[in-house]
Amino acid sequence: MQEISNVVRAVALPPGASIAPLYAGSNLADAYAVGLPSAGVRQMDMQALARVVLCSQPRWAQWLLAVRDTMVTPFGIKTAKQLAAMPDGRIGIFRIFAISDDEIIVGEDDSHLDFRLSVLRNRDAGQEQFGSITFSTVVHCHNWIGRTYILLIRPFHKLIVRRTLARAVKGGFA
Image 1 (spheres, one colour):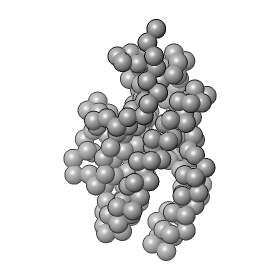
Image 2 (spheres, one colour):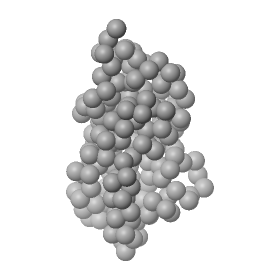
Image 3 (spheres, one colour):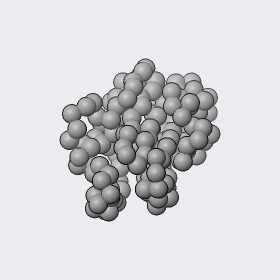
Image 4 (cartoon, helix red, strand yellow):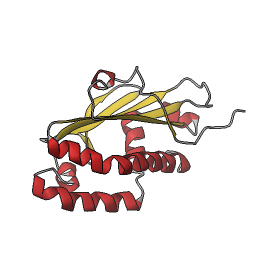
């Protein structure tokens, strides 16, 4: 029996992701992958899978989001509370743009930037026993506020994505 790769690793931007056409000219584009811990996760509905992972953020990341909200309010940037209260289809603060059998695209469009997050499931075992998921983020900034925002949050973004994926694996995606 192969050992499950539960180590979150930076990977190349997946060409098969629906957001691949957005990679060119982006202000931020990255991807992280982790092995799936069980066959059950391999069969999960993508919205349920994304909900489990996106709701696995550590408390310190939630605290950072609250700090971010305080700092961005004067610039007219939507807060997490505003985003979560919007009536369109959402997983927490993330608007759902598209869902397929093995991918969900979430994100947001705002005056300062547009971002998309692809949660892409690879059911092929390859190195992992049950396949893997890849989180790919693409951000396009519209102005100096967006570029400054990305510059400031980039290190936190990478850390939060890695920790969120690691927590989901540790919890068995349950």
